[in-house]
Image 1 (tube, rainbow, N blue to C red):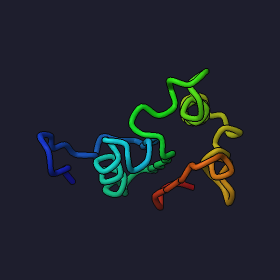
Image 2 (cartoon, one colour):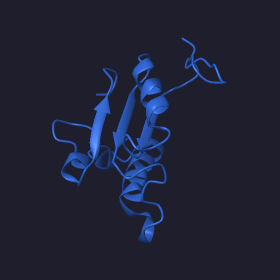
Image 3 (cartoon, rainbow, N blue to C red):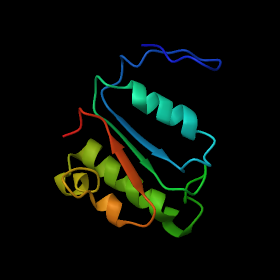
Image 4 (cartoon, rainbow, N blue to C red):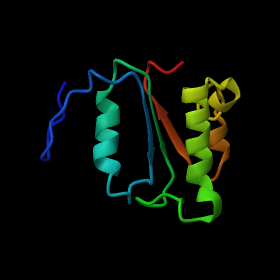
Length: 110
């Protein structure tokens, strides 16, 4: 399936998984990012949003909330850290206990 709309068109077939962090609806990348997320159904995909805009919270001390979430996603995906996976998976993902975060998962996420 190719992405339409805009100057680029690309298939998602090469993906092995997707973890998308966006700054909520005011983020300039939100509409395209969420459109991409909704099209990916052949691999696990997670989209998290915090309504802070395109730059996230990286300009805050230690990167703010976005750095906490980014680190957990990388520890989980790159290091296989199952404790970090609890931020996004299970019946009560830890990210939903943090201020203003939303989480969407496709059917491939366990």
